[in-house]
Image 1 (cartoon, helix red, strand yellow):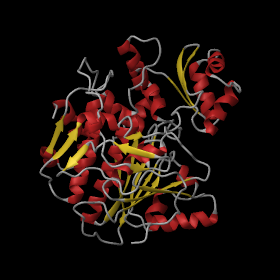
Image 2 (tube, one colour):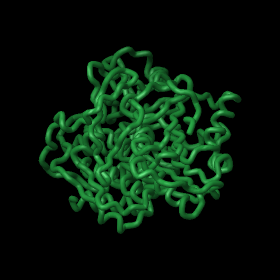
Image 3 (cartoon, one colour):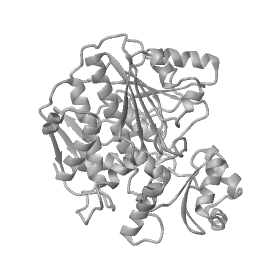
Length: 456
């Protein structure tokens, strides 16, 4: 294992409160790195390693060997699915992207129809990026960011790392722990025997997450046998990502403003082991499901939440996505400087989302292991912006060799019959005692299942 990847794994595992003796079981394979100003390949390897260490603790095996393939880890941070004869929609809306304002750069995130409409309410109903760019150029970036946010949209002005460190939100989130953990309520039930081949079989995970970190977390849990039920609002869709993040899961819809659907949700929550959610700070509270209520409805609940910009500070309730957080925190600025470019240069993959997802999975597994030992659940919080600090603290990457190109040997031989057509998955980036990620169900469309746990 490279010294840097090992040190980062140790940092993440320490944030999880993990037993350092387990680090001796880890090894990394393959050479090279993703092209970036930052150590993205080491970051990918370390965050996946932390999730594997937490799984090993859950199994209580002190595995003879946890192997992380650095190259495959990097590839999974881009996409794991390889469609055959079909393609998912383009990942970005036609108006999403980076624009030059009067005093710098700003990114507009318009993938969701409501967020696109918010940007157009501020800037006008422009149909293409050229017209939108002309409108943006007449604005100060800070004022435009604020106007779009107040309109209910998503935007981020580009800051340098130093500017973000001095920003009120930067100071707040950088002072937060990577993983904030509180003790929950006492569990009403005990543990059960662990299946050696599917170690999370019997664990119920209620998934209230969307783009992209939370779905990565629950995909990891599903890949080791957990029953994951994803719940989305009636009108939500993210067609470019669903084939990537839903293997092994069932997907249903509920309207938490409907009395009948609330009763179903409460029944599901009362019989779940883990709740993973990505609502903005206070959003579930306003629906009547604050942390105390969730723990009361399900004593011993392992409750893991995510937001974009942290739980404290003036932006704690702000909408955000990986690409926006890269702009805010200085990552895109440093990328531009590294490449000598004239516009923002993001990471080659959405590493903040993926990395945070694996750390969320590690936190959930540690919560389960703790509950088995002491009988109490937990309330855990993470954020994309705090994960960004983890990556930034590694410093700049100097020149390194490129990763070897993908070949057929990198793909699992099984054909996954998804809701959209046949596909292959990359082979697992993590191996534990010869076992890796394996999905019992193909990727499925949102709302394709009923909101109920499977019969035993």
